[in-house]
Image 1 (tube, one colour):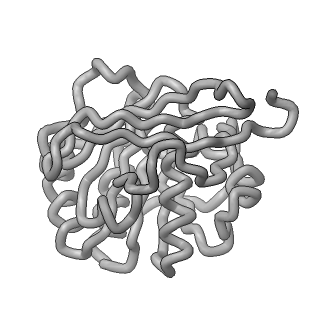
Image 2: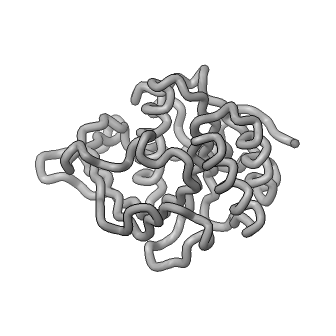
Image 3: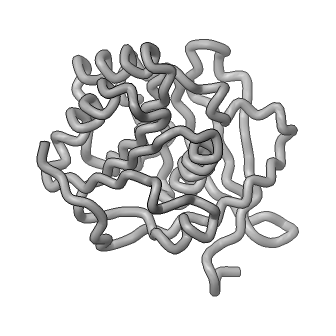
Length: 210
């Protein structure tokens, strides 16, 4: 497994993720609700998907669950925003992959260890996960009661990663009338419950962004 750890280029700033739910706190966008599943988060704006992903990272860390973030070398999240949002960067395993096509295989190895409660794959717009690997990741997530979270940059109308994705949501950000932003999540597919729920969180942007 070829990997390197943390030298950030082209960082993407997520809105800071104060977890203030706009929808009632019965939201299903929580670790306990989606554990054991292969999950896909799509979005045309990386910031909304990152914000919703980091809300899960933060919750997982507070629950004592180890978290891994797998990303190509050419992009990443912006660490100061993650730290300000409460994420413990020292406890976050960040793996930067020179060859994007092997990202899913790295996730497979981590999932096989059973040592991670949440594994995030930042796939961007181009990287796909072959169906056999999706099957393995879905099985390992279920076996270890973990979450394998795939971030994809694409429209809600674009096809899913594959039929083995258990939950697919689409993230978007909108400016809130009272100031700040709302990161919203629309469920496109939920094999357990059906696409019957939604979720939104109030966020504030990086410094200098009104």
